[in-house]
Length: 230
Image (tube, rainbow, N blue to C red):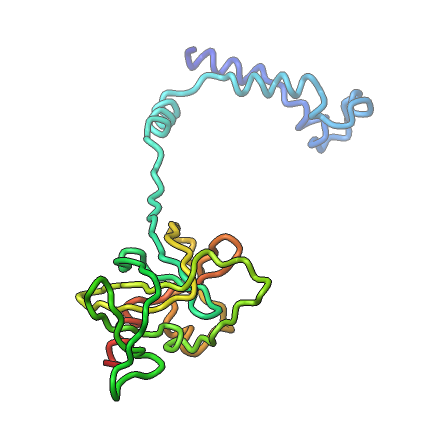
């Protein structure tokens, strides 16, 4: 449609609602207002609205809209990570799943003369090789957890977990293994202000897994601390 026809369409539009309608300031009022209650209920108002929507688009707007609609939608980058979730004492904890090398049956822990303590438990046999065994619960100050006789929520018996980071290899016992849990980076929540002490120092945040909360551990701080007990 030409600019002349476009101008003609605009000139033919009668905006009576701005003069004698609900938005008008004139003392004269439309005789149909009492019946319709509002200009939005008037067929003249709705018909004019359709005409405005059907009016021709000028070339500048057409090009702008064409460019906007042709642009591909922005893809949101969502980083997916994996956590190895386990229970130490009465606390659910997590470590980056990439650090976990294997999970084996609970075995005997052999104490080290003059060195064994609550954190440095001793040595364990992992597939014929002696490995140093630590207690993560002792580092975090987690109390031992006694399973109630009527409690049937255990997913697994006690296990030994083998983990390695930057050439440092450790073994630690866990009360229960939940397994690997995949989460988006934004799912890691900040620690509540009520959490303090060792738990706050060793934690990056909280993950909500099923119906329980998991304290996600800072693996660098944890490994550095454990190595100081050697």
